[in-house]
Length: 85
Image (cartoon, rainbow, N blue to C red; front, side, top):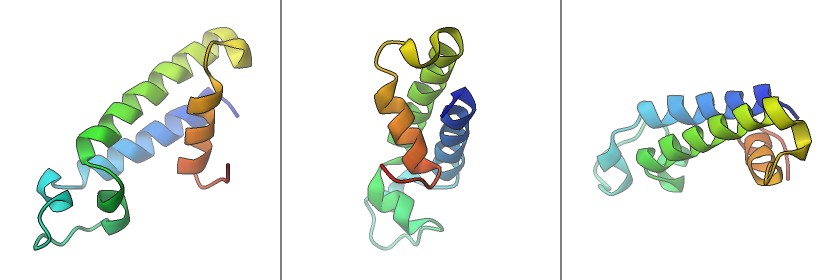
């Protein structure tokens, strides 16, 4: 796992959040191009998580795996990128 994996997950979240209309998550009559994403979280949450992952990537580049609290963002990034927990 690396900063690149964290950034890839952040980009994935940004792309999916940007493709969604925030109303799709609460209006059953909207048809989302990404139903799985919208049923998981509002786009604003995805964008906030992307920022958190970018911040963790910057910390990872400085401290490596010895940075504080790097395990949770790395685990989330791995899951977003198609891995398993």
